[in-house]
Length: 270
Ligand SMILES: [Zn+2]
Image (tube, rainbow, N blue to C red; front, side, top):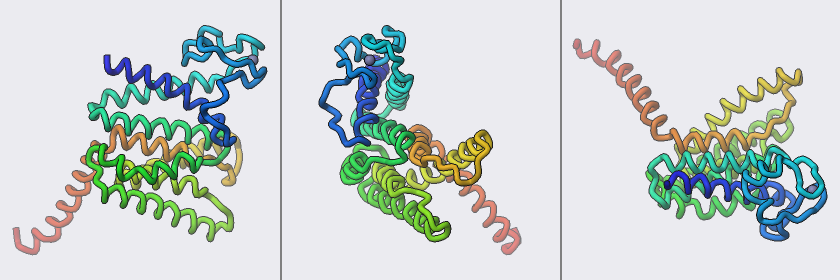
């Protein structure tokens, strides 16, 4: 039952995120005016604005001008609903659920705005960085200090990478938006999450980047937005971070214990 409400909440939230994705980069209000058809300006009545259902009922076309409605709209609603559903299955506290749901929503908006415009809106990242140490207290395992470290490690690390790249290539390879996104991730999820997000985002981004380069037969200059990969990395941490950390620590611990014993045991004649 709880899962069902999480899914519904995700659908409604996703509908609002669609508005944010279109309007935030254009610096328009996300509250007013009411949603309308981008083709004919026809204002949507409530039954044309139901998440997912209206798209299906209208067979993907505007009721007024019959222009096709972008598949993006129901897709964003469905993605958000599935994320909320998956979060509700994690056994988080209610407070943690809402913090993670807010983070997932921010990441959905950032992903699609970055794909459309190659920018990551400051109106999302900066306020979230500000409140993240307070919010992190609600999230398991993330202390106030860990959150502050997360902002410093996340922001500082990526800022250094961007700085080195710019000096080496003489052109901007990564926007400051990515830096602020990773600072926000570190602030909410802690410094280990910032490192994980950067590593996971880079690996997946490289694989997809090479795939795109091959598919489009283009050179190294192919610009892919980095934000979606960082967003995916951050979400992967939310769902699998603790398991990854356990695995990593046991692998690293086993390795260093093995290494030490290989050196020390012969010395003591064991
Ligand atoms: Zn229309």
